[in-house]
Length: 87
Image 1 (cartoon, rainbow, N blue to C red):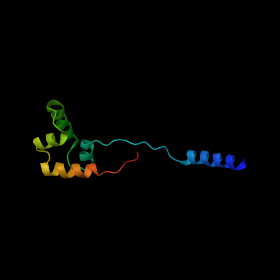
Image 2 (spheres, rainbow, N blue to C red; image 1 turned 90 degrees about the vertical axis):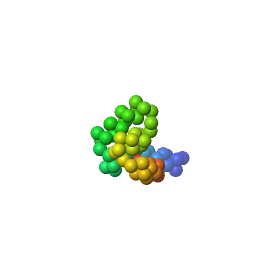
Image 3 (tube, helix red, strand yellow; image 1 turned 180 degrees about the horizontal axis):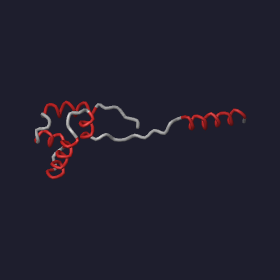
């Protein structure tokens, strides 16, 4: 019985010490701004084109001349390999 109570106390202490972790999804456009590949204004402009035309954001950035297609592809591969980010 004493072992069970001790185990419960340890579990409660562990829960109190462990920080609350929240995961947030990073969007490709935000990733590009964070990498300084594009500016916030360029992202907004490309997003407007994306919403109006239905093309992917990378294609919109390329069509507008903000990034070369090869750069979009390279950055997309990098984005896809991101690990989970804890916030």
